[in-house]
Image (cartoon, rainbow, N blue to C red; front, top):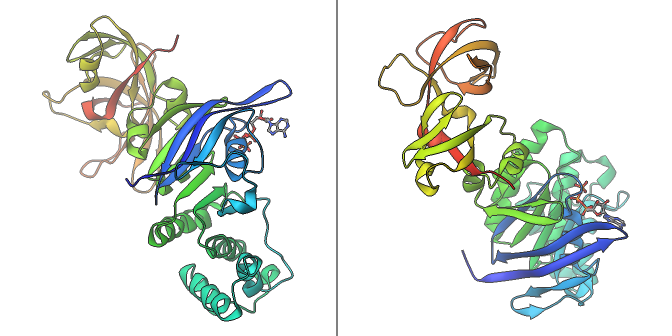
Amino acid sequence: MGASLLQVRDVSKIYDDVRALEDVSLDVAETEVVALLGPSGCGKTTLLRIIAGLEAPDTGAVYLAGREITSVPPHRRGFGLMFQDYVLFPHQDVFHNVAFGLEMQGWDRERVRERVREMLALVGLSGYERRRVFELSGGEQQRVALARSLAPEPRLLMLDEPLGSLDRTLREQLLDELRQILHQVGVTALYVTHDQQEAFALADRVIILRSGRVVQQGTPEEIYRHPADAFVARFLGHSNLIPGRVRDRRGVETELGFLVVPDAADFPPGARVTVLIRPEAAELTADADAPNRVSVRVLDRSFRGDRYRIQVAHAGGLELTLEIVPLDRPPPEPGEEVTISLHPAGLALLAVEG
Ligand code: ATP
């Protein structure tokens, strides 16, 4: 990771009686792509608007390369914006849409033409200069918007749910392209989304906000494998969260019996914890020595192409949702009793809140 480019320090913002942001601090390094992830209303857009200079914080400060910019107006920050409500000019052609920022900055005509050509090649729209924006598909319009925001070589590119209006297939495709393009250009980017898949696929680092506060920061893998608490875990789509009590360094006592969990070494014996069982931790097993063997009854099964999602119940009533890839045996039928092994590396212990 490079030197810190953007620093947000202790930023708070209150609207009437809503605390939109509370003591938010974060850093974004040069060329890093950071996703701000959180449920609707957690303050993501407010934070982005404060960083862009479209909104002033009540307290706290924003720094760019060590210099305070909290009261620098938006157009003097040199940031690029790709916001949903920051739309293209529909009746102008692609060339003029992409050239807009460059002309505002007084680039000469030859340089503008060259830069627009370069940006359209980057987003896969070479030769689209004379097409009108309203004639383009939604995905093409998003590419034009990206080309426009990257053209002036912004110090920081900020994207607010840029793929939100696209259908799922197109979104997945653009997501991969967007990641490649951001890294190819080497732009520093801050990406706002409420979609964890999007944040995971795109970002080098994810920052999770809840009710205006930063609750966790880390790489996508760290956050997925070790959510800070049950709220973050549920928000990321985890549903297998069960209470447990640490027995010793090896593992925890739970309703499913004793489970070996590497994290147990981080807690004192007797500590109350929440055990996260990631769906991919489970494997159907006949091996008597497999770790964390649990007998369950299959309640439901759905085919997901590369895997099966199964809903199972333990004798005590506890239900789990698991994902299995049975390569060498038929998948279990609803009603069947099976033995699963929960791989210790697929389990995590979360501190209990309060
Ligand atoms: P979403 O994903 O739904 O856009 P968000 O995480 O971006 O949500 P914000 O738009 O930043 O959240 O809003 C944070 C909180 O501040 C919300 O409770 C919202 O209602 C409130 N809020 C935002 N802007 C204003 C405003 N201009 N006046 C009053 N309240 C506001």
